[in-house]
Each structure stands twice: as C-alpha cells, then as structure tokens.
Length: 247
Image 1 (cartoon, rainbow, N blue to C red):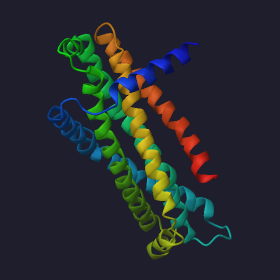
Image 2: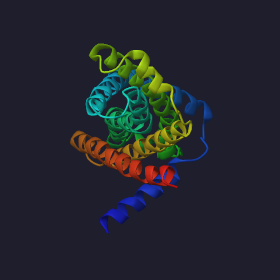
Image 3: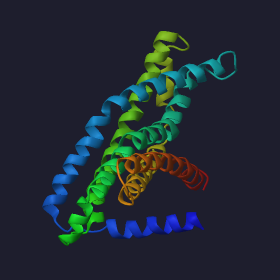
C-alpha cells in the first residue's frame, strides 16, 4: 500500500510539473543554466568511463573468442553492438543518476527547507513547474547527447585497446565495426536515453520537492533519489529491451 501511495504522489507531481511554461523568459534562463550544468560539466566523467568500457569490453570478449572457430574480426561487431545497445545508454544513465540526480534532489530540497518553494507559491507561481520543467527539458537533451558521445568514445576505446593488446589487427577490428550495422540499434539506444533522462529528473525532483526538515533530510532525499533512479533505470532497461528487441 505504501508503494502505491508513493507512486500516486509521483503521478500527481508529474501532473503539476509538466506543461507549458508560465514565464517563458525565466524558463529559458533556467533551461540554459541547467543544460550547461548537465551537459558540459559531465563530459569529463562520461569520456573516461566510455573509453575504458569500450577498451575492457574488447579485451574480455576477445579473450573469449581466442581459440574458437569465430573469426577474430567479428570482435569489432560484438563490441560495437554491446556498446550501442547496452553499455553506452545504461552506464551513462547510471552515472548521470549519481551525478545530476543527487544534485537535482539536493537543490530542490534545499529550496524547500529554506522556504523558497513556499515563497514561489505565495507569489502565485506554480513552484513544481518552475523548478522541474527547465531541468526536465535540459536532461532530455543533455543525456541523449552524452549517450551518442559515449557510443563514439566506447568504440574508439575498443580500437585503442586492440591496438595495444594485439588481440586482432586494428584493420580487422574496424572491419568488424563496419559489418552488418543496423540503424535500429541507434533508435533503441536513444529511446532508452530519453526514457532514462525523464526518470532521473522526475524521480530526483519529487524527492527534493517532498523534503521536510533540514540539512539531514536533504541528504537523505538525495540518497533516495539516486537509489530509486538507478532501480528505475534497470527496470525500464529490461522493459524496453523486451518490447523493442523481441517484437
């Protein structure tokens, strides 16, 4: 019963926070600020993780292929599809859940406990829409863009890895990267990216918005936001995979 009540509160919060901006100029300013914070400030961590994910995947999958009847150039195709279908969208989303999810929850939670949210309500402003909508709009642009960036870097990491490890020649690996590419893989990955960005932002925002108390409660709200965002990402990863890949 508790979980149904929580889910109901989440749906009601979405109804309050999603819609046409009441003051477009203010929305635009907040949107640009949040887009910069989510996108530009995350390039470093996404770059490092993506390169090493691709490099490790190439080594591990190559190790399994050594001595088998499968030609080694197929390694490039397997790593490419693994990166695009799963590693880049899911791992990037999990990283962003920890990075921006906790930040959203703590920022909105701080506004709540310092009574800034109450001040907005007194001025006749829809506080939920004011604090959530710019972040949601920014996240559905920033996270898919970072996922595309991660796809490129993870495959680049695979090339760097095989160049140093000698599992397969770079030309052979690139041959595998280019073979039998299905554009639907990109559609699938971006669908997951848009879904994950929505979940991260809204789940984190509702935890921040419902915060009561002081600094300790803000910290707990941030922690719950990250944990529940990660669980939602994994759950919807399974659901979308089942729906889109097994029609």
